[in-house]
Image 1 (cartoon, one colour):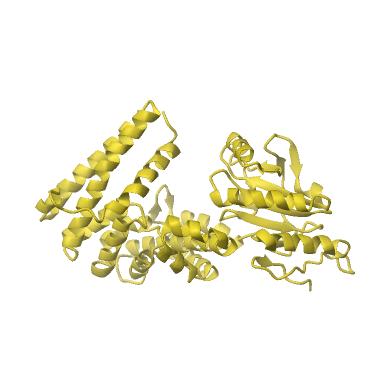
Image 2 (spheres, one colour; image 1 turned 180 degrees about the horizontal axis):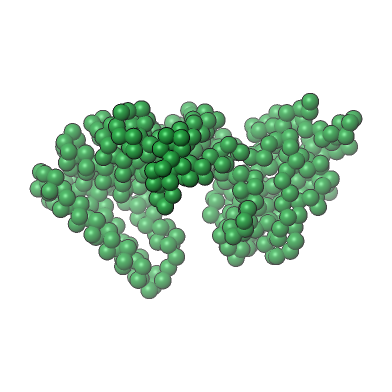
Length: 423
């Protein structure tokens, strides 16, 4: 038996390799040529859905990796053909009821930002932007291609049913939050741009670069509050929209601990189970780096973080990690494999209030710079900017407080967020 994450990873490989073929496949010999009515489409979709459900049962009972791979490969070969069948129907009859339902099915069951999904979303935007039937698909419009935002805005601004409008607004808020988190990564780690272009496509990266993350977050907050106020009793998965929106609002309204304020103390255990407390490092400049084994950009920072430790080894400086893995074993393995030289708290997800929640971390990696008095001075500085900020604080050393004993929280201008001067 295998963990569900393994199944998802396995499928993702097939999807990544295969979906580019979907929209370029030909209808020749395809069963969709016989689809002319709603009943015909119902029969075709039922066949595809039955096969999908059968796959989930087969993968759940796979007893070896080889069997799992075979089942996945067989299913994906079928599924690519199925997506090709249905998107071709939508493209051939875009303004009809059959075309609309076919497009809705594709955006529901084909991963966002893949070509087939984008084409189906474009059909819905052009021909059916205010159809109440799209309600079931709004939560699936999670990609970064601009067509998803346009489609959700069309529904949110329309006179469709109040239920459909509420779900569209909620999905739009989710999209804006996801995009702002991606923009955080892009702004704080510009060296990741080639990797993101390879992963997402140049046109999507360039589009996200034109967006403003603060504006996106502010609009998301307004949308969540409106949904709570106007449609809070509607169900959302196993919650109400009111409860779901409340959960989403917490990190957005509190964001990070405020720059210029004392950092929340962290008192816990490191990966080896030894006691570790942030307050024990008062008098030092401390960099806190949030990382995890599943965060590629976090791991790519490790060599530079190790160099930072070596560079300031004779100074009152410490770099400390907060690991977000589900298990401490995964964290230890990642630390060994990537030669992590700094101690890390393991942020046990079973804790009542995790470190991630206390620091309101919503994107990875996240880095805080804390001065000798425990005051947050910077966040999300990397590379030479981070080294310069640490060097500045170390040089300030004896003047880390003003003449009235208050923390001196001035800091050099940099690409990250900087503390304001004391009042």
